Length: 257
Ligand code: CO8
Image 1: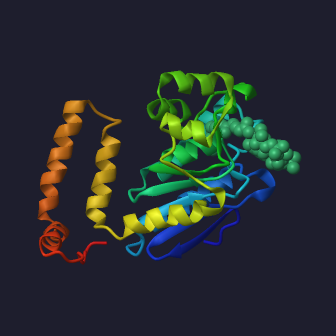
Image 2 (image 1 turned 135 degrees about the horizontal axis):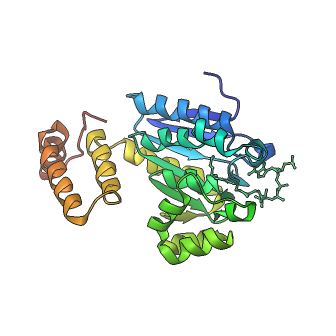
């Protein structure tokens, strides 16, 4: 599929998906959604890919849903067309996704970053859920994922006032894993993704699934799930290889990357 609103490339088992609507600060319209789903699902199925980086431009990761496309929608349009529902397909992809965020990550842009597994931000990044200033609320996970990431106080502050928070505040609050200088953002994100892609894929995918489980279950259920997954990884060749390599003081050669 030839893409209009995103660019894709692969580097050493890592897929890089770049939002590319510079005239609209990467606003997320329905074409972006369709193309992002196509690309991420394709990379998820691709045995040659171990991790995905989603990024934007230096000025904007994404300035939100496309307000001009959305403004005339009615409740019935939204309901019958399941507006926003399609984005769940990206969240459901099973390989790790890193959001590399520079500039604005607002509304749906902040929500797209949060549906990735973690966020690496440049020191110019600005996060916010300004939907309230348009007379709506976040609709792609903003109230739920932001509250889980930063807690109630800050999630309420951002969702009720619509203010932006800078990269330093976002890191301090737990929204962002790392903050790096803008010029290094993509390199750092790709290196992190390459590290992940060099490790045993079943263990990587199970680690992701198990951390995700922490947000979907009680502590005792989550601990039980973690233990079963831990047990099961001893059925993999890569566990034998990883531990043998440690004992023999050599580098492991993993099969299931
Ligand atoms: N939608 C459509 N076009 C946009 C958007 C957007 N969200 N953001 C920016 N643009 C366009 C502008 O209209 C402008 O286009 P033009 O040159 O044709 O007038 C161009 O991008 C450049 O923007 P600005 O001139 O405004 O640039 P500034 O540097 O002056 O300002 C800001 C940058 C502060 C980011 C400003 O553009 C802004 O406030 N944008 C809107 C931010 C916003 O409110 N986002 C939330 C949208 S609602 C939402 O995301 C709902 C989420 C739930 C659904 C998720 C489905 C994806």
